[in-house]
Length: 544
Ligand code: HEM
Image (cartoon, rainbow, N blue to C red; front, top):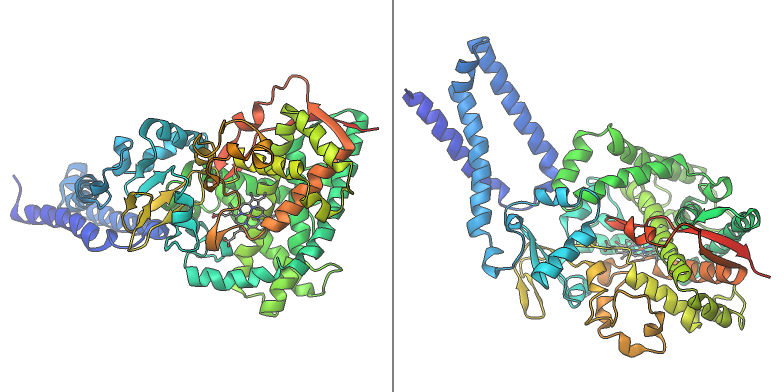
């Protein structure tokens, strides 16, 4: 028999769930508050449980049927029910009638399961094959495979902002994580000093020094005939460059032929991004509530390490022989160690510059080993020039076409780079996407579309030189992204890639190691916001 008080408690609990959904959670963004919300609920429910145990002792039935406990349970149920009903029947995206898996309109939690092996690019590709150009992939998310979507959501004219995912460092600040366009533009100006043409000249000297080191190590391997995992070698190489470029302190991995402890930790930490990129709120819960466990611990240690390096670099203040990125930041903020941007930006400089460049270089050597005729063509071009003459390398059609084609077929952002519409929504071709919707534009699938690139799944560098008709819609290929948030390091990246490919192709012959058929690089590739390739085991031999 329910008492009046019991009835009122139950009603209050149920109504409060609906009220908090419609009065609060439905408005604005809550993903970075997810840990606080969870903590608050746990705190309140803990207090309710303790108070009832105090009143009813060990009588479990009385505790569970007490007014406050029932009200709390009903609150949670009605909150969840209200969310599901709203999403199922009234969400602004429902009117657009985009096709997609049935669960997508209710939750993105199931995508974590689909992405448990960090293959979001393959999963979204399957959805494209099943549903077509526009797929609803979340309650407030669509995935658009139309090439023009890149420009519509990311171009200079676009009103769209970066999606919630970019708050992953919150409350830390970093250029990459600045979602407010004005704030981003201001910080980007500070970075721009470090990438001016004169600054790039300084960085180039360092790049050439590290290419010498790469060459020296490869020569050793070539002489003793050992197998080189190009992916690993190139990651060591680019992380060493980026340490030197950022703090004038390399990680020493190429020389020691060993992973630096902190780089292993950054790699571990990014394992979380594979399954959780699609659910930023869960990412925040994981990072904030489990700060000292497993990969999350590695994440904090990586951030702290970078911060310590930056502080050390700012403390000794002296200008290194060749200016590094910190020198350029110091010129702007007068070496203020308390500058909140430095912490996030130091990590960003190292990660953003190293992995993408290594990933593309690994893809290039994978493709060259699978298609050796391109090695011959590049060598033919190189026979006419000096391999350290950047201007000359820039003019070599086939060398540049090979790099361009590797970036197309093996993009660094496979599915990452999502944007969010503002109050005006966005129109892509004849598709209108309503306000405040996350838009994913998977580079992996778009760059392979047949209507963008003939034989789009094949490695054909000639499409960038002698067979331009094989490029049907160049809008499908934006390796460095476009608009305000595009890659600030792209000129540096081109230098690193041209010099490295030229040097190795000129000095060595190489082929896939016996026992490997070349499937590892693509087959074991994971999508952790950026692509992380599988191994590329190669045998090198010095050329005569
Ligand atoms: C082949 C190598 C590279 C590729 C393919 C690449 C690609 C990209 C892409 C696609 C973005 C946009 C990311 C987004 O929208 O979420 C980006 C941003 C960025 N990249 Fe690169 N990148 C490369 C090399 C580099 C290098 C060498 C640096 C030097 C430090 C660098 C620094 C950055 C930074 C700082 C950003 C954030 C820019 C901003 O938010 O304003 N990248 N990169």
